[in-house]
Length: 235
Image (cartoon, rainbow, N blue to C red; front, side, top):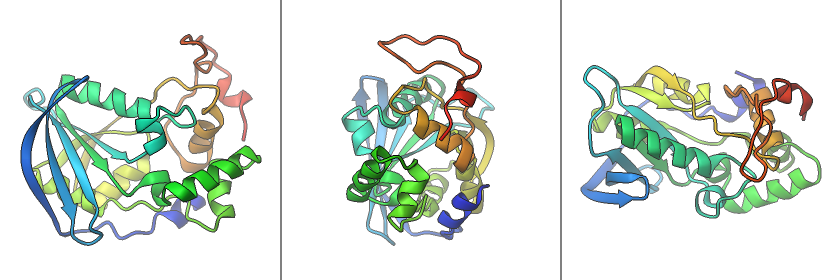
């Protein structure tokens, strides 16, 4: 873990953490049929949403789990500045096919700094700072998220062993502290784009994300192989 990540992720993620779940309802979507359940974090008051496959995983396999941090710009508006919206779609498609749950974690915009601060960080990135430096220039942590509530929600859903859909090993460490065993990390890397390649390179180089970045950025819906991309796009 890098020094920047360590400084920014010192929340205590060990439980128990008081949460409560509401009724389970049907949720038909463009990605298939799911069931959904809202959860309230009684420490912060934030409401989260569990979206689960209607069918269980194959016998003997741990369910897929995605902890998806709220990203208004990427999830709703389809911003190409990040890969969040595309990761969300990828995770829902895979969970529908193989079984599992996506936890949509609200209150985690901009890795926990909030929407307004994220836009301020964007302005600094446009001035030449990378995503880590922009947060530091604002006097904000690189990653202010806590996964205490997520771990408790998974535990109360009976999901004690999971296959984690993530490129971020810090999520595995934080879930372990919260009492959830990650038996496998399942990559969620989606094709990079010209607009987000520097952002992704920073996550790989400075935040230890497990990214290959071994393709040319998507351009007009096409990508081509290029083994040197990760070396030729430095921050």
